[in-house]
Length: 206
Image (spheres, rainbow, N blue to C red):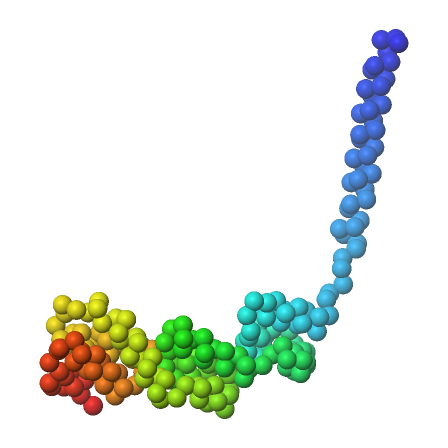
């Protein structure tokens, strides 16, 4: 092999690389500039958005409608897609409300008043809310209030009596329990601990 052959070979490799680079550059330019995808059909976009929203947890119709509006889906398209999702059972506000009441009452101890407020915030209609919170009767609600007070009672020991009362009643109020029920439950819990509850109601005048 002569001394010139390696140089010719090296030059050929460099030329080949330049050729491949030019071909690659020439093929990618037009695809970016002249082959843009057509805009997606609004109904397809709406369906995709709803399915993503429903992944992992149920949603109310209003929650999905808000998501579509935020992504600028036309109202008539959104209405059609949402109605179709209702027809096939992917949207069911009654089932959503029932599951919400069961979960939030057991998990957080929320009373009917607080549960109804949360469901209204989520866009559930009043008639559906009434039916859902109707799962909780007064006895069950009071039993849950007693459990909540019992779980917090120890942490209030050592405090002045009226301060204990306010802290425990306030805890129940934040969870949606009425003042009358809260006072009765807390009074009984304190009496069971040997607290003198005479004049206790004066801390919360009507």
